[in-house]
Figure 1 (tube, helix red, strand yellow):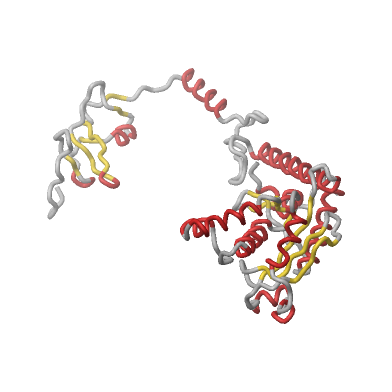
Figure 2 (tube, helix red, strand yellow):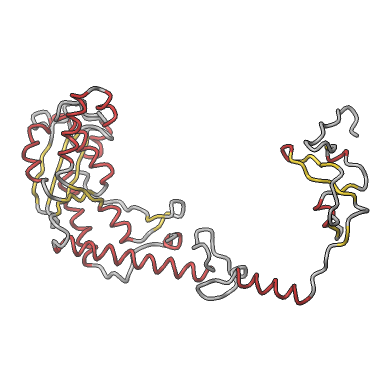
Length: 339
């Protein structure tokens, strides 16, 4: 027993518990027995326990009572090897995946070569789907589409410019909008819209009826719908008499009047639909982010003004529809895609 340490309390079955340095000679746990080619005899009971990682207990057996482990016959060993070969055989080509392990980003249950082929097939199928989608949008087979873009007074701030075009980039609506707030210098440095330019511009409320007529029954393609759609949602909330940053939860908490006005904004948003062109273009482009296991988004490359960005979106849509679905413009990152 270690000097200066109290004995450990016994196990629930009353057997003694030892620290590693306190185990009496002749007592071994199963792993130690196995290293000597032994195993506990049938019916052999432990004589104590070894305490190890985080108070776990390993049974200790008398070495002199243990019996030799059975030695596998050549026939039995061959059967185990055959079973292992079947277990690790790639379902794609039949090769042993232990000899050709898949890379960390690969397809589970496939060897490296089959993982690459599976990934390439999925990339080709996704690109073909994006090309077909773009062709159907331009042909009108998917209903009425518009291209839309917003500019804001600051990141996630009020609207200061809105543009809508048809899928060919022809202007449908393009107006500066008074955000009823000062434009942040950082935002102005990006889109070039100043406070003087929007001072006499109409507010969103003054353009609401015109926009409602244009948007009703259409599907609007935004480059980044996750950004642009909330901008319009906040403006609709403000139009119906709530603070522009109000959310559904905040409206419910503010009482029945606020909740009713928020519901009006929600119903207006339901009169038209939206879709993200950036995600379709990323699928078409075919580059992948190895960390996210997803397609890497590409920059639009517009002039950061609403109408100019809409026209650039029209160019991207046309490029997708006219492309060969079998070729890809992706870079080396494509092999990081998990289907």
